[in-house]
Image (tube, rainbow, N blue to C red):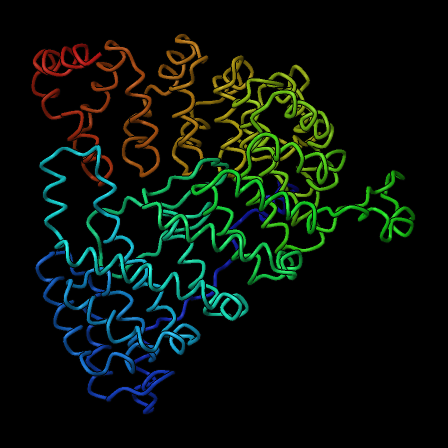
Length: 622
């Protein structure tokens, strides 16, 4: 087992550097007489802002208190707005407060900042306030469009939140900023700060809430409900807000003007302009399908894989040989630049079937094995597979990668295996072959080693020859957990199911109590093709461990799913086990929640009454 330790350490999280505390730094610089970078504000106002940030950090959960705080702080910025938004500390505070500002205060900022837009948009601090103003005004201008399906009472309540005059003012300001950005496109595109205002304008005009992979901006106010968790990887759909048609027309103008530039073909190869084009593609997706097709087609023809690219340096590349003696295929220009690669991934996300096929044929075909093993480009292969929905295209991709499983495990590009597994599930193709190839790569295809498949899959490490298999305390790889969950949803999940059921109870308990392993219980209990007998066997194997599961943070999640899948008879046995040591269960926060949810105290008092009130109600629900 000692020989395996270094492999596990490779996957452990790197030690993160301690993040600098903004408020602590602000106090430290104030003592030195440095009142923030940027424009100068009075020392009294600076110290006041520091105190307010301290209060916000502690958490202001009461809406009335929050409203009063916002009103008082924004009141103090009167006649100092330009200086405040140009100051590092003032800019940070105003950004936090504007989403909660009253109609009067927000409109005051509209009026004061509008004449100074040219200077503000290119400033490293005030440009953030302009972005925030744009986002807040757009939200308020379009909020009434988002509730068409809501009950009438809720709709009326939302409409009363802002007056019609304020909604009109917000709409006018949104259009004003976006048109101003469009009119100054030639300057803003190359400006480090104004470029982000262009991106925010495109997001607002097209109704983008979050970009793929983007995390929501967390406000320092401690909200009671945090429902925005970002968009997870391997997701292939975006949600857009409803926006007026005149908003969408401006997006079309942005696209037409940018694509007509002579520099357009070089824009994918710079970080700043590539980021803008990515947002433009996501925006165009909700505006006009023909526009999206036109933009991607132009990028493909002029930037990603222009005609005649293979002739450039092809003779030199032919001389480069792989270690196994096979020639490395020349790669299109797009794969030479990370910024261009990220734009290609965005293009794969937004295009329809016909254009997707063109990208696959011109950039990827016969190169997937080479790309999947490269540190930067394996993510692009994942996005290609994620957005494939046609069996006839997916199968050649799978075949091209089918003999690369061991190489992908060795180089650590295991996200490609996740994408392949999810593709097999989504398209219902090559599921048996995927399982066989993974078993072979993990050295678990032989009869005696098949029982170790589940653990080696969770570890994503091949089984060693003479090394004892770890049953507890091993590192669970996030990709290994996702792959095992996906396998349990396959049409024939017999091998992963049997492998899990052959584990010792202690191993199952360890897996289900881990942050990345507890979701395996979800997949096992919800799997469409996992048999009832298999679930019964799992429930029986965990007998005597339910209290331990229920008491731990992640084990309680697994316990919930297992309990839901249990029959009435099994639920009674689980409840009997929990009630035996009721006090111990209540010793942890998770255990108390489980005890309250299942009403363990009532079961302990009278099992019969508990059965009448809980099991019968469960049956009615069914």
